[in-house]
Length: 212
Ligand SMILES: Cc1cc2nc3c(=O)[nH]c(=O)nc-3n(C[C@H](O)[C@H](O)[C@H](O)COP(=O)(O)O)c2cc1C
Image 1: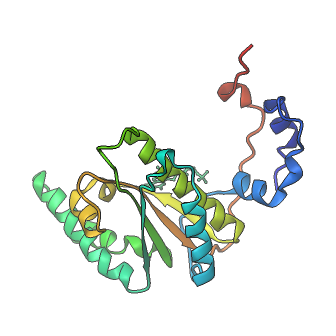
Image 2: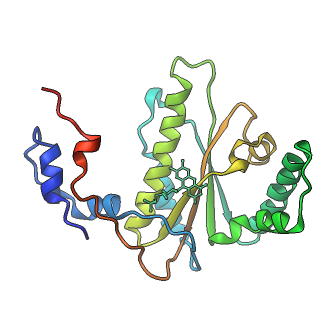
């Protein structure tokens, strides 16, 4: 684990508590990294429940619970791949482009990049006084909670979006409305070897200032 203690203390001068209070949680947050190639085994039933529970614990203005989770495992990934490829073909044809077999097969196999993929939708309440961006923000926080939970469980993870996330036919296939949003696709599985941890050495000043 990268020791971030000194730097963290520098940005939290209002809080004298030691950052080592919950080393496991903090380690999962700081050491989380994306892994593109994820293999079997994916999360087991209990692990999946913990990951979803973490998502459901995200902060949520107005308690609207906008998040919707669709879990893909096993052959469901192949079946949804056909829907993704159909959607890509329509997008390409609408722009006058030809859907090549290479593009189609890449799209069909997209969800096979991990043993488990969770599509995360934001069911937006357009009549609510809570701004849409905040409803989406709560759903994005749920995504990050899932990545952290997966890391804490020793699983690899990656948050992806891409064109299907903005395709109305894909939203509807997920059980969402066209007016809803897709916050991402959370890929989960085992890693060959832990991803290397980037140290955020010394550039806090670029992102953090203390109002005086
Ligand atoms: C909203 C969102 C969408 C993302 N979409 C993609 C994506 O479509 N493809 C991809 O390779 N990575 C995607 N990422 C992952 C980022 O590229 C990744 O987090 C970044 O490369 C930093 O690497 P790290 O997660 O290891 O710190 C996405 C991340 C977020 C937050």
